Image 1 (cartoon, rainbow, N blue to C red):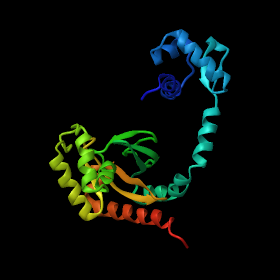
Image 2: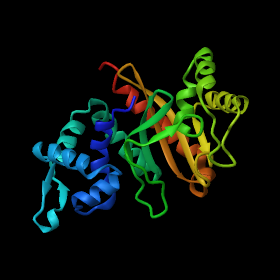
Image 3: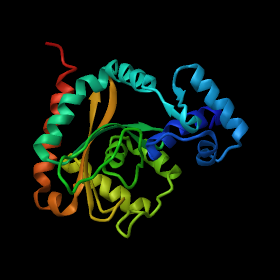
Image 4: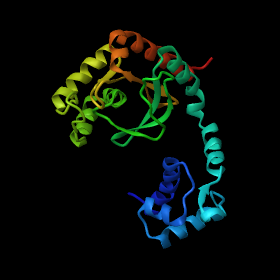
Length: 247
């Protein structure tokens, strides 16, 4: 279900994030693809709540820092990310690649936090991005954690879209890949979602819930020492799961 007003409210902030400059009412309405009258009502509501303010020049509109303050307060109270964050940063530093923590949402994977690589050639992403289960390493890790009955039920719903020539687009090929990955204890995506990009992933139990941890980077760096990245991931998982153990 998509609530139109809620969607438009989020679109306002995403437009400003994309344009990175003030916009007048007409420009904002054009970017949102809505009538100026509807845009005016939306702007007035957000302005009255302190999320937007009006500039004198051209009557331009821009967000205040209120949304940042609210977001920071929310993030600071996320008990899972508060615990996992330092491990994720360490994983990024040890491997030199982008490290991600994810969660399954329905039949998709959503990124909860991303520690982007500091190298010039890297995989870059942001929290809130969604990934397909069949073509991402972390999606495969979640699929691999299912029972055989749960897996068959999930695969019957999934559309195995081909994103690259390497995407696994048949249930037989995907199940074979998952079986081999289960046996070795970690999952990969080798140019299956983006050509020349490799992901390595596992899942971890946190507070009786399952999260995905992955490393993503260019194929030319990861493939030659794939075992190193897998061992780094398994070590990170061990550290995260040990946080739940009583002392």
